[in-house]
Length: 154
Image (tube, rainbow, N blue to C red; front, side, top):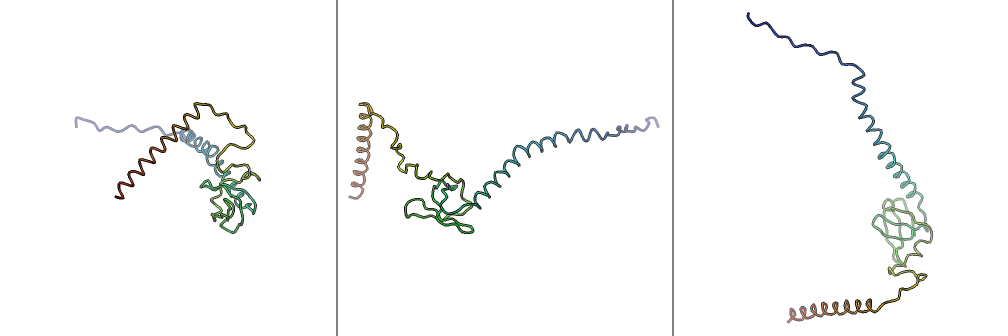
């Protein structure tokens, strides 16, 4: 034969240190995820569970849906919350998001106005003119709608 057989050169044996060094970044990322994401989340979940288990009558709470109320009754899985005088809502215990300090509901103004302790702002002439123009625009719009409904009913 004119051409001799070619043999592949064998690779040098891999060192054990090289395998450990290739895994080191992955281990570091896992440790980072544990301390920045997993551990704080499990700590928050544990605190939330303790708070829900410790709920009792008279506590003021906020639900996940944003309902503020006073706990009237606590059962195994449900709470009865008073959201307004003589208006009660039954919710799951797990839907309670926050436990409010005592007396918080009394300080909240349900109408959204500023508290009585703050001084009312003086209205200027331009504010009065703006308010008057908004009212007249609202009357025009409502008048147009009334005209449309009257024409449709004919």
